[in-house]
Image (spheres, rainbow, N blue to C red):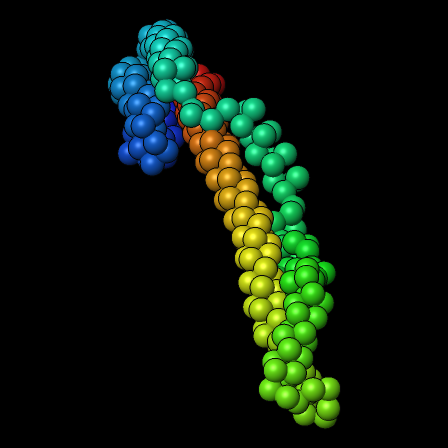
Length: 264
C-alpha cells in the first residue's frame, strides 16, 4: 500500500517534469537535448515504481543519479564546445568602444552654425568679405587718358575755328564726361568680374567645408552603427550562452530534487 502511494507520488512528480523535451525546445538549439534528460528520470522511475524491494529501489535511484550526472557532464561539455566553436563576431572590447563612442558623441560637432544675416551661409564658415571698390579698377593712367582727350578736343576745336570760347569748352566737357563714363563702365565691369570670381572661390571653399562636415558625420554614424552591431551581437551571444547554461542547471536541479524526494 505504501509502495502504491509512493508510485502515485512519483508519477505526479514526473507529470510536471515529463514535458521537458517539448518545453525545452523553446529555449533554442540545446533546449530539447536538455529537456530530454527528464525522459531518463521517467525511465528509471518506471522501474522504481514497479519494484517493491527497498534495496532494489535504492539501487535504481543511485543508478539514475549516476546516469543523470554523466548526462549532465556530457551536455555541459557539448555546450561549452559549441560556444567555443561559434564565437560571437563582437567582443567585450567592442561593447566598451561603442559605449565610449556614444558617450563622446556630440551632434553639434556637425552643425554648421546659425545663419544670422540670412544669406544662406552658416556663420561658422565665415561671411563673404570683399574689400575692393570700382575705384580700384580704373585704368592706372586714367588722368593721362582724360588729359589726352581734352587735348585732342582742343586741337579739333581750334582747327574748326572755335578757339577757346564757350563752344570749345562745351565740347571738351562733353568729351571728358563721355570718356569718364566709358572708363567707369570698364572699371565697373572689371570690378563685377573680380568680385564674382572672389565670391565663387569663397563659395567653393564654403561648400567644401560643408561637404567635409557631412563626410565626417557619415563616417561617425557608420562607426557607431558598426560598433553597435558588434556590441549587440556579443550581448546576444552572451545571453544565449547564459540562458542555455541556466536551462541545463535548472533541469539538473529539477532531476536532483525529484530523485531526492523519491529517496525519502
